[in-house]
Image (cartoon, rainbow, N blue to C red):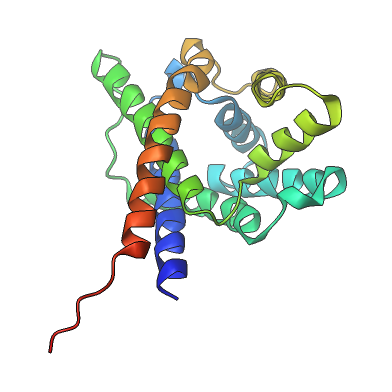
Length: 210
């Protein structure tokens, strides 16, 4: 029970931070968004609903694709990821406390914060060990089916997603090409840190007062 509580705390906190990072990025979207968010924002601008709603719908589509390609990458964490990041994003946008675009160098600081938070969020939720997200599961399935490396599968998939989002009028710009480059090293470092932290918290015995 203690282990599950710790695992899901890491997992849900990571998803919430992802939602926060996405919401901050939307405020300075003219600088460019992550390829997946370019697509979500493009669908929102063209068809309505909310950015979070499209994040959820796109996530569920990729859950279905992964299900047919390789079911081993689908579990409870995959569905929770698809269902929760979008609402978290909408919640932070609705609260309306995040800094708006100023068209000054401050926007680049906000964008940098977005990438750092997203990298930390990825490390935290993956360290929880609850399961991979729908997009990650899909890219792992593509890698396995095509014999491409995971990095190659990710680059190809995100380039296609970015092209579709841009064609639909999404906010693709210079920053869109730097997200993975910057987030990946942060993700790798924080993943190791949170994995060690999770294990230490699980192994730590609660002190019982006599």
